[in-house]
Picture (cartoon, rainbow, N blue to C red):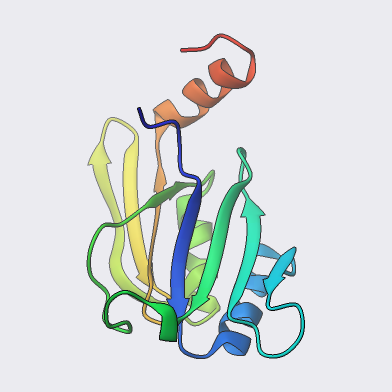
Amino acid sequence: MFRGPATYNIYAADMPAAIGWYSRLFDAEPYFRRPVTGPTAYAEWRIGDDQTEIGIIDAAWAPYPTGTPSGAVLHWAVDDLDAAFARLIELGASVLQPVTPRGEGFSTAAVVDPFGNVLGIMTNPHYATVHEQHSCGDGR
């Protein structure tokens, strides 16, 4: 039933600041914006091994109040957890959960971006193996 994330949406009340922050984090400008002219209400990037879609939506469109971290945490696989964590903090994110070993090669960390969204990162020994099998047509 679940085939993978289609879009990871986050919200920001200050769209120009959020677009600038995420452009620095991803080292790329969004490839898609709406509306095409006027203030941006939605901006989108594709990142990572599977080109996962990340969309920033103007907080005016949020289905719930924004600015207070809560809810589920998506953990992005990273090669160097300490370096990724340091980069997020350097860019102005605040620590929600420091780098925390979970055992057997798994470690997690989480930050809150300057707009109130939670970003989780992790080392996950299964990620590379599964991704390699999947991209080689193994189908598992």
